Each structure stands twice: as structure tokens, then as C-alpha cells.
Image 1 (tube, rainbow, N blue to C red):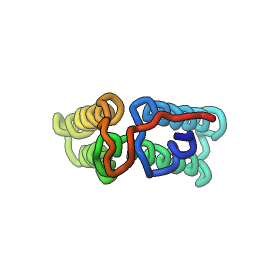
Image 2: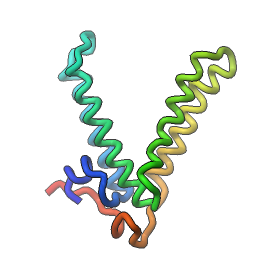
Image 3: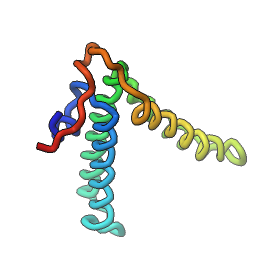
Image 4: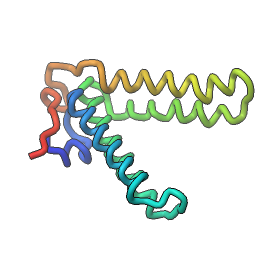
Length: 138
């Protein structure tokens, strides 16, 4: 699978190696923009564009990885659970604030990362295509 298809298309399947390559490319892209290109002390609406581009690309990579695990792309909505836990923690205090604000997002995020990046895909062809493909740069 070509790199631009792997990063920006929601069709097909992506194996574990392709997932980690896509994840790494997005991480490097955001790291470079945040530290070397954008002014971190000044906010402008143009500074949101790299974040939106990376979010779209990560959604495409994760959706294709879910397809390789024989799951629908709708399972990507599981990402909202740790975000909602964190947002709900502001209305609590004490141990519940720690549980909702730190423990649950870290725990759920770790489980999602294991699901997407560590567990093997389905070896048979499914409704999303044949075997998961790695990323090619030529």
C-alpha cells in the first residue's frame, strides 16, 4: 500500500507494521510542527491545520487497522471514552477525580493501543479486503 493511501484513505486493511509506521509518521509530523515551525507562544487559527490533518490521518490509519482485525471503522469511536472520562473528572474531587482524570484514560488508552498495534490481524480475507498490507514508500 502506498504511503499516501495508507495515511489518507479509509479503504482497505493495514497490518501492524503499517499501523506503527503511520503512527510514527503522524507523531514526527506533529513534533516537527510543534517544535520547529509554529510559534508555541502565539495562537492562531492556522496552527490548528496540522492538528486536523494529523487527526484525519490517524483516523484513517486506525480505521484500516480495525478493518484488519475484522472490525468496523465505527469502533474508532472508542477513543471518545477516555476523553469523556477526563472531561467528567473536572466535576469531581479526591479519588474519583484521580480515577476519572488519570487512571481510566491511561488504562483505556493502553488497551486501545494494544488492540490496534500489538494483536495480530485476521489472516483470511474479509469484507474490507485481502490480507493487511505494509506501507511502501515507492
